[in-house]
Amino acid sequence: MNVLSIQQFLLYSLAVNYAILLVWFCGFVFAHEAMRKLHSRWFRLSPEQFDCVHYAGMAAYKIGIFLFNLAPLLAIWLVGNTG
Image (cartoon, rainbow, N blue to C red; front, side, top):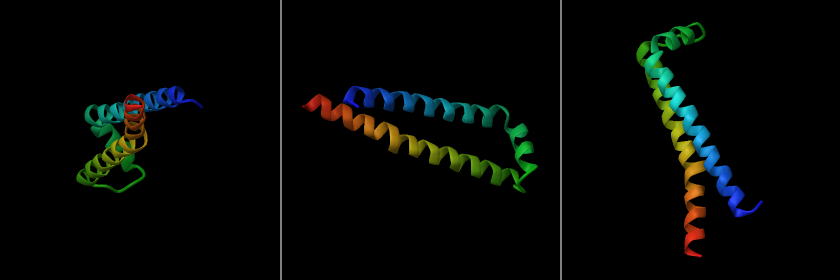
């Protein structure tokens, strides 16, 4: 694999992961009650706990996107631009 293909892979991965995060956020905002009812079939969570779990999950997912997609992509771009 050359550097260009790694950059493209990281960029596409970043876009796909942010799309997933955006769909999750939109589902959480616009279908909050339906999601809560669906999940309450399997788990006993209060509405506050449900919100906290999803908020923490979105935060962890976003941090993962930063660590595994954005940071390596920026590092490759910076090394490529200085060299």
